[in-house]
Length: 57
Image (tube, rainbow, N blue to C red; front, side):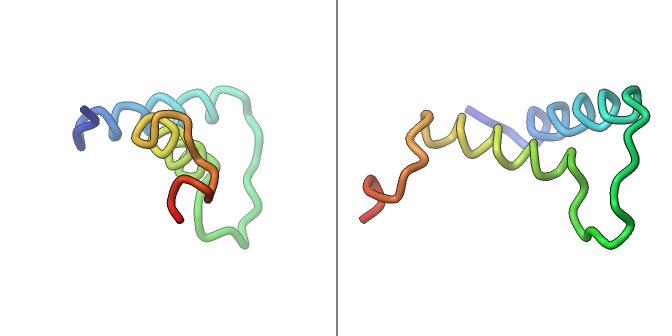
């Protein structure tokens, strides 16, 4: 089960990893790369890898 602490740990890991690469994000963005990747990982874990729309409808 994903808890808030686990999601926070995933985000912190990705943010630290992103800082280590030295890549700059576009200043016009409202969501960081780390937030987007965290959302994708949490979604994949929560939905068990079934991210297509056919399962929802």
